[in-house]
Image (cartoon, rainbow over the protein chains, first blue to last red):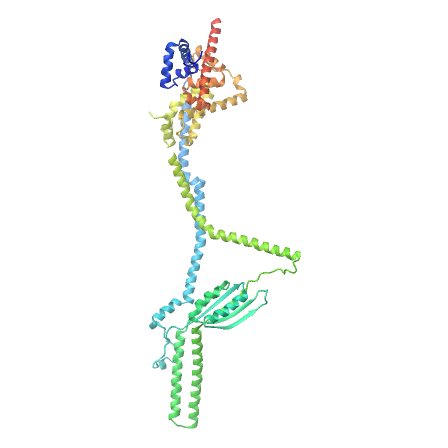
Length: 393
Length: 176
């Protein structure tokens, strides 16, 4: 029988019987059943079979099963609540975040506290040794220049018009230890810096031979105003291994020296007047002349001191210790295998040390920052993903 | 009345009463599922209980896209297959006597059971899921992980075979 002669396939009858056909198809089959006895009999058979099958009944599940399942459910529920209560504590993720945060905080503290302490030390040292700001302030307010108060001739000098210095008298000095690759160039540059600064090279000593690690020790006397510029230029000569600067305020000593000098000159003048205006016995004249000579000697000594002090104030002292950065070189004329192996070994060792140092520097340089941002960003990303998943449902 | 899926989601959110209601809806159908397929009533009850325990333990993994009805029967059918594998290994299947259900009609029900036992396993399972568990064709296909056309053809053949078996049994009974 073809589909044209019999429009309903046999396999469509069971879905019809089971109520699995859509409305249109179901009504089509129902119409067909009214006219087709075979198909109606097949559906009736299925119905009878279904009726027979329902004869096989089973008892209900026991009450004990109900109790067991519900007991299990309560246990699960209690366990779940307990897990939820302590979930934050037992989750490895929480431990990971906590430990990461703690490590990041520790690293930050380790890095930042010593830096902070160092910067405070530097500030303190600078304020003690380099009172440049103080100098400016003193220049702006000359009335605050310290006055000598404990000089032995204070009473005598009280009547003397003291010629006070125009500003504070600061003696400056600096010391630089430099490691340079270009020894000859650096030496020439030191001499040039002295010339350009309108100063002079007080002392220069160079030791060592070309090709070996040479050293140089130089003392530069430079005008105080040019010190800063000169130091900047000197630092460019190589790696600065050590640097120290010192300044000393000698205003009070200078004023005291000047007062004593004026006083001595007055004494000399009075003695000279006495010798000229009064006549007396020879021993008295000799005594006066001896006194004049002593005062003169004292005046000259103090003048020398004053000159030296002026010189030190006007010209800062910069001591430069320079050493050459020496690298072993293999003579090209005698490249023996042993030497080459040795040098390769040394170079390899240096490369290994350098790479380890570089890696350590990299870790120290970026490690704290990466840890810090990881501690901040990873929880945020995970939280965002969780929210995103929850929204997706 | 709340749907099974709603109750499952409520239980997922922590409402214990939702599971109790689900359990009341399915305790007898699931027990009946195992009872009709296994000879041992105690074992059928154990497996029904295990099915609910599996749902309890996996409640956090349940996703509302899946119908609860197919979800629970899929678990039950896997439990059944696992049990049958164990029985085959222990060679119990043939050795154990057929244990009659307490409420079954000895005349018709016994014939039905005997006839069903003679059907091909694949055909029998489709027919039983349709007749006793009242699953739709789509649900049967999902539970057994077969195409829906396979369900249709197996169901049609199963009914034809069962009818023939029952008729032959009836003829033998009359001749005796």
